[in-house]
Image 1 (cartoon, rainbow over the protein chains, first blue to last red):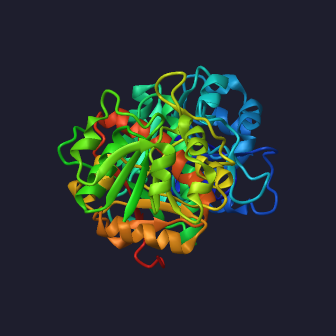
Image 2: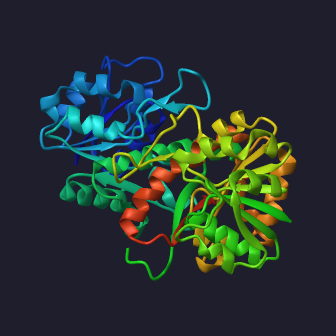
Length: 222
Length: 222
């Protein structure tokens, strides 16, 4: 599949590497679209190139949003609203505000979420929130952490969620039952807020190799 | 131990019942301190009685705050700041705002927490935030949910946290290693926010018999 990846940070790098390894064609979008220091990694991937946000978005049949939270809405504007039409936008970002240092707070209130802001900004896109509650190494190599653990998914479009599930199972190696669909895009309020707990756990463990597992009574309908 | 329990809702009832069963002396505090409809449950417990917030607080060597979030600071004022001096206040509450219906939002921003507001209101109390991320039936009967799962703890006073751990293991049946101490009271920002995810999971499962388990790489120092 042709996949556009917005952002050039660690999350974008990990996801791009895995998708390239799995045989997809990748265009990584950055603000300028030019190779600057630290972006040589794109050239080392098969079937991958660096472009502007706009070109990466036009290229992709599916788009991953891996831009740092504060920059997301600007980046999507630069990418061009119309270029997302009818496409799946996998939103991995978090509304983290580091302006007062560590620990971060959220720049979105608990009656909204960054995912909903994105869906409102791009009404013709199919936004699927997922992968925002764990480190990128685990996102693309879930079995590197032994034991059962979960991903949380939210989105308004059922077919889009199913397609993202297929990619997560086939290309990233997630067991199908590990992906918990929490409903419409507003469920991202819960999964984005949970990142505040993730940060405190990270502070404790000084290591990002951990994840949430939801233990459910065996009698509960899944 | 003499324990004061503030609040008369489901959480207060479950905790009072368990602590009474375990041989503690209980005074349950309510706004009026009088028996009104639905409060007969206190009389059915051994060594338990109903009183005002103030009397229950004065009685307790340790206090449990089980008041609904929006009422907490008022209730603590009625209980009398001085009555908490040097006492452990186990804060089980959540800053849930149901004023716009379901799902709730939080009435505290992500750069603060209700637990911190309580600690600031009662500087001579030893506030320990714990038990706020799961249903009361699991709080006091953790083994009723099969498998490993966790509690998150936050508080400024190390000895107070140790004492609360002892009660949780001895009286409620939590394995010691299931209780994750996330640091000072500000870590409650993470555990209170996680309740927004809990609510979405509850919506999915339509059942509150589930809990968070943090899966950690075996090599990580706990």
